[in-house]
Amino acid sequence: MLGAWSLLRALRFCSTAPCPRHRPFARLRVRDALGSQNASGERVKVQGWVRSVRSQKEVLFLHVNDGSSLESLQVVADSNFDNKELTFGSSVEVLGQLVQSPSKRQNVELKAEKIEVIGNCDAKAFPIKYKERHPLEYMRQYPHLRCRTNALGSILRVRSEATAAIHSFFKNSGFVHIHTPIITSNDCEGAGELFQVEPSSKIKLPEENFFNVPAFLTVSGQLHLEVMSGAFTQVFTFGPTFRAENSQSRRHLAEFYMVEAEISFVESLQDLMQIMEGLFKTTTMTVLSNCPEDVELCHKFIAPGYKIRTYAKKQLFNWGVDLQTEHEKYLVKHCGDIPVFVINYPLALKPFYMRDNEDGPQHTVAAVDLLVPGVGELFGGSLREERYHFLKQQLARSGLTEAYQWYLDLRQFGSVPHGGFGMGFERYLQCILGVENIKDVIPFPRFTHSCLL
Image 1: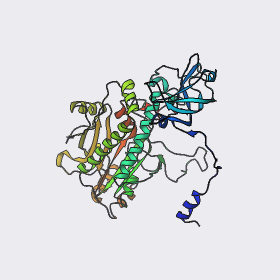
Image 2 (image 1 turned 90 degrees about the horizontal axis):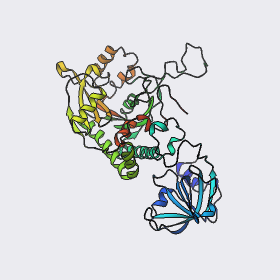
Image 3 (image 1 turned 135 degrees about the horizontal axis):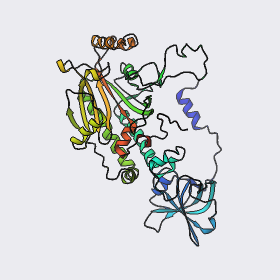
Image 4 (image 1 turned 120 degrees about the horizontal axis):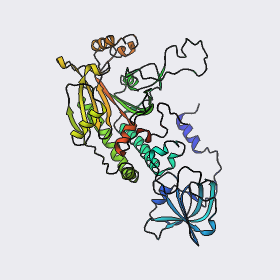
């Protein structure tokens, strides 16, 4: 069997495609073409979709975009290239020379030598109309086409950049990435809002389970991360989670993405809050640095006047009823429209795994939420109850002792103080972009009575 180094050497000399002796045109992304500082007639190939066509007597102007940037590349061609198939929305391959543009609107342009229409587009039947700014609500009915608009393109590029920034933050901070399961027998939140998993065709008797136990789509990877935190001091996961909430509100999805982390040997909420704040700030600064045009478009056309604030104010609330969305937004506004930490919630309002503060009649747990403008709760976290007898009592009160015996076992074999948190990724995107409806920051939204595509 080949060793890893032998395999790597073999791959270097292995190719399924013949190597051409001469490449007259280098394939170039629109983003890279626009970033060229010294365009001096190099021959390039650009592939993408036509965003505009303007034909004059002797010159044809196209704007071509391939999704790599908000800005499109201007293509200048002889009017002889004009034809009825060259329309808004059609896909094209353009070969030509990348040159400095005489116009002040762009630094470079592509002087076309050949334009080939790859895929036609009937502009009259196309739901996206040239020069029209379609509302996000209108585009939701076209989930297979809405990614071609400037607004959704910008949102999805920001989403991609934020995803990379989150992974980079955790990697640079020494976290181990764990792939937690999507199918689980646990209900981390205890809310009962679960999707049950069953075979589409009954391969066993109807009263039997495929997994021998009821199985569900996960609502959180937290409990699996706690297992891993017994071997790794810092772990995180980033993946889809599911809630069967019968809601079509602006805040709810049936499928959404969660960023979750668990840290061992943590004994104070302050330590958790520092990591939460660091993740929020670092990710946001990276997005602002790498996607300024995309963020600006969202703030200009989707949320005019919206500003991002990443300074977090620490607030302490020792007692009270559970906070609703309107309460969360009020607290944020009262504190100056900046992110606000709320800590120490009543024990009766929180799940069994949160650490008891043992603080007398108030009886709180070491929980923390980060509330942000326009959204409310963005992060939720806590110190976990690592003390065996305290956890056993909590599970007994909830009637969960038998189901969570494995969770109790973690407290008997090398248990340590630990804590963790989760961040709703779509809510994060709403926060930094000012997008009101959560359905507009995910490529394919799933919610009650809607599962298009």
